[in-house]
Amino acid sequence: MSSFSQRNNYAQPPEISIREDLPTRLRRPLAEIAARAVGSKTLLQTVLRILDPYGLNPEPLAHSGSALWLLVGDLDLGTVLRRIEKCPWFQIYDIVEAVCRQVARQDQQSGVPVEGAPHAPAFEREINKFFLYAGIGWQLVNGHILTRGAEAFETTVRSAVMELGKDNRPTAAAQIHEALLALSRRPDPNLRGAITNSMGALECVARDLAGEQKLTLGEVLKRHPSLLPRPVDQALSKLWGYASDEARHVREGREPTREDAELMVGVAAAIATYLTCRHRAVAL
Figure 1 (cartoon, rainbow, N blue to C red):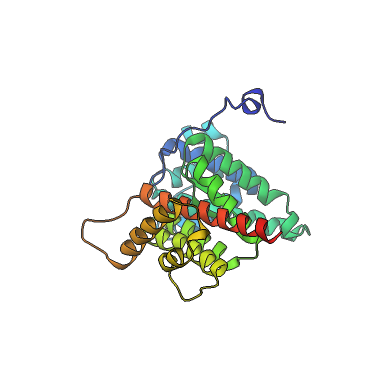
Figure 2: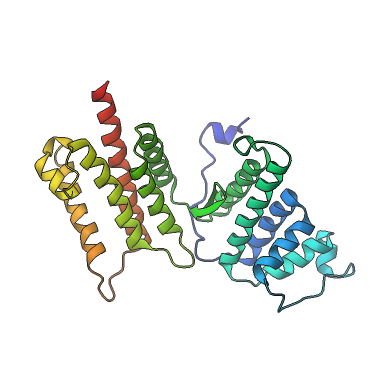
C-alpha cells in the first residue's frame, strides 16, 4: 500500500543529478541490494569476473579484525566494497546488469517461467527505487541499464512504445528503443544517434498512415497537411529539418546536448503516440 505522501503527491522524486559518475557513498547501497539478491559470495565472484577477468590484480580478502569487516559483518561483502570503491563508475552498472542476469538464471533453475519469475523483477524494482531516491539518471529495464530522464520524459516515451505496440508498429517502437539505447551508451551517449532514431520512428508512422513509403517526413507533412493540426505541422517540419541537419552534417564544436536529444526524443514519441491513437480512433 502506498504511503500518505505518495497518495497525496507530496513525495516528489529528487531531480536527476548523477549520470556520468557514481560517488563512493552511493556504491555501498547498490552492493548491499545485490548481495541480498544473490548472496555476498556469488556477488564477490561476479565483481571479480568483471573488474579483474584475468586475475592480474589479486587482493587479499578482508580479515575479521578489519574496520570494514566490523562495519558490514561479512568478509565477502567487505571485499566487494573495497573492490568497487575506486573502480570506474560505469563498471558498477556492468555489475548490476550481471547480478540481474544471475537472479534471472536462479529463477529459471527453480522452475519458475521467465515471464513469471518473482526474484528478477523484485531486484529490478529495488534497484530502480534506489536510483530514483539517489537522483541517478539510469534505470534497470529487462536486465539492461538504460537512461532515465525526467518523469514527463519517461511517461511520454513509455506511452509511445505501448501505443505503437498496440497498433502493431514494431519497427517504429524499435526505433524509439534504439533512441533510448543511444542515450544510454556508456561511457559517452550517442546524442546525434538518439535524435536520428527518434525522428526515424516518427517518420515510419507518418509514412505508413499517409501511404507514402518513399517520402521523407518533411515531404509527407507537405503532401498531407491534415495529418497534424496547424501550426504543429509547421513546427514539426522545422524540427525535422533540424534533425536531418544534425544527422547529415557533423561540425567541429557543434554537438547536441543531452537536453537537446531528450527534447527531440520526447517530441517524436509524443507525436508518434498522437498519430497512432488518432488513426486508431478514426478506424473505429
